[in-house]
Length: 133
Image 1: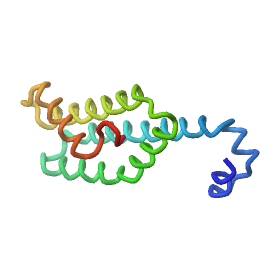
Image 2: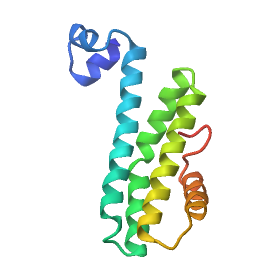
Image 3: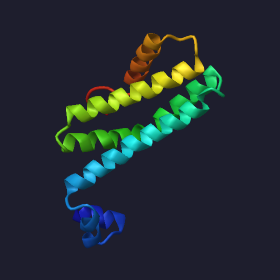
């Protein structure tokens, strides 16, 4: 906590006021990461119907690339916190559902099952699989 306070330019007392332990701080950071990903998927979902398939593919690649360093950080935090399998499963499921929903908006003829399979394959290719986030 001392190092975190020093790096963030925060007084240690202020840090402890909002985060009584490093576990609480880690959990908060993980929640913020998950919310960020969810929000970005929601934004992509809203604009998906106005994008061509190629433009959507580019947007999804840009999105996953922007998360690369954050994903590594989140995975390290999860590992440090005991690597809750339930939390990982829930996050991966949320990622797959978000991507499948976007695919169904852009490609209305795609079946739900095919959208879900494509989402699983894409998530795995982007590193959102067991042990990586």
